[in-house]
Image (cartoon, rainbow, N blue to C red):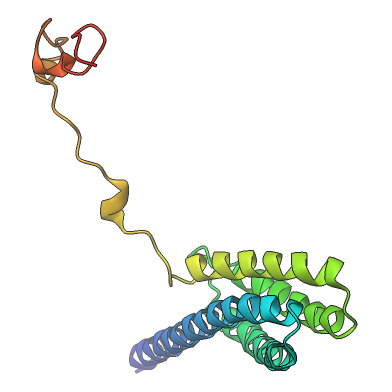
Length: 173
């Protein structure tokens, strides 16, 4: 009986963690979109558009709200054995950066606001990679190896073979 209860609890924990992972990915994706729009709106605001400045402020509040969701979701997803231990720390960095962003933007301290926004985008990009949103495909990193005639037996290619076409010694530059 206790084995069945343990299996049900483990399956339930897996489902809960999976739901948290999906939610974390959505929130991180939302952060990527919000920060991308922030850069655009910030540029328009610096150009003197009062509407863009108001939209930049509202979008910043949305970014802060998403950052508030990030930390508990990252804690729910964190597991010691899967390399996700740093997600809560990075999420806390994003939350702190968003809070400082709100203050520095409100007081127009652009010397802090602009580089911190760029750094925040970098941390969120790292989070998107760590949470599995943007993963390079395995196929793109594995290039097919070019077969050189004679190399299959450990011998160097023959002089004048296809392997030398396009090299200096082949004369076909």
